[in-house]
Length: 572
Image 1 (cartoon, rainbow, N blue to C red):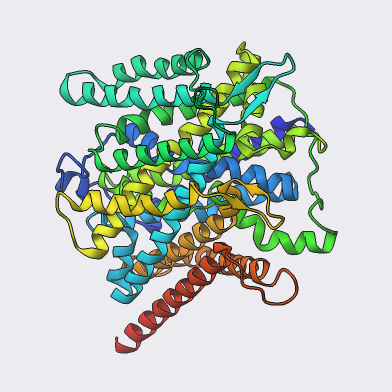
Image 2: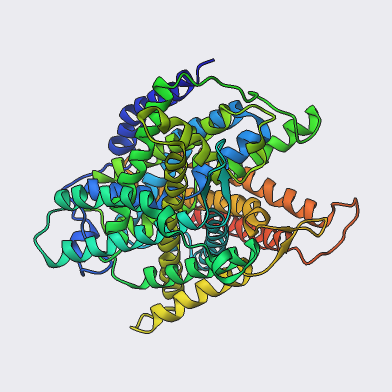
């Protein structure tokens, strides 16, 4: 079968539901009204609260939420279970769960002066639930930073060898990435200090992103050769560099880096999608990978593993709790008018679903015995993108570099937002907001990931493995549970305040599903970590320990919410 039919079908499905279900959410559920002044306008301080044009905010929000999740997750899930289960969950999850979650988080936040989703929980449930939710979120963010930092640095170390022997990736991508980070700073200064328009700035700086990819191989940062380091040591160095960038990016004004980088990153990612679309339309690629695969176990265990592993593995490609933090942490502070919540929240989630479909397509075109199947997801993605863009005349090496850079762009845009959100949460929880608090809160939030990504992780056989492989499952599970808890908060808010008395159902049903799948995943991770030999064996593996902590927090928050709703109903 030609892969075009699958990808085009998914795109048309997303467009249809954006026009129909998205409109229903905007008009009937959330009652968006541009006559209400948003916090970005009423609280404009030029630093965190800055109203942005929807097209500007779309790019920033999209590049912040997309990250490695909709690339890495679908690729891993597709390899494990086949492309059909992954595709079904990506489409249904994006439309009915992820989109509702993202849009609801933004709208709920702007109705509470752009405070985080945790403040919505505090106002509608209890202070105790708020504290527990904050702890859960902070732990989740730590694992987001750990997983995404390590998977990004792998692009700066590993390479893909082409048929002609040419190697792509490694230090060349590192050099291109550094140039990419410099460009938005220059753009931000020009936009802020001169009369340069956003349109002209885009026309000037977007091609320069392409130039940075092109010249990357000429100025490759080959740390292995320069300092005689092993690949493992080199990756640790890059991990430290990325976290240093996160620290700096999270404390400077949003106009200096976050907004222009998000804008450029958004357009760059749109370009990646468009180039991929051209390749998929005219390339004549056929599906080679199995629709279902029981490669991990026998058929019985295959279906058992799929529930819940599929859902926590696809992660951001269908729904991501991290999006609620972006939506209520930074995006809501920049939303110029309420109606923008539809395109920024629901629309960008569906676009991320499309990124996940394209990522899955990179697996679908591979033979089951392809050597690439055992590669890291970023290289599978880059190889697929490289094949797609060759049809528009881009050489294979440059195309793969383009794919790796697109992957890195996704992650950069999320990492600094994630670290900034860590700062917001610590400041909100402690109540300490001074000119020094942001440095302290950011430093604490960086220290824990630094310990993980600069340590050596080992598998059960004692072999060293990348940190992202160790923590991807727990990242996926806590990320999906975060979505469940955010949906619970949105449900209670709608139940209490919505004009439509049935509006809460659209978030309640997704909340139940995500809650069950995520807690099931925590139990599986605890079983695999402590009962792998048939009897309880305590190890130093942090995954089952963190799973137990998160399971306890999630159940306690849900119980607190149920108690608050029932108690208030009885009092009424």
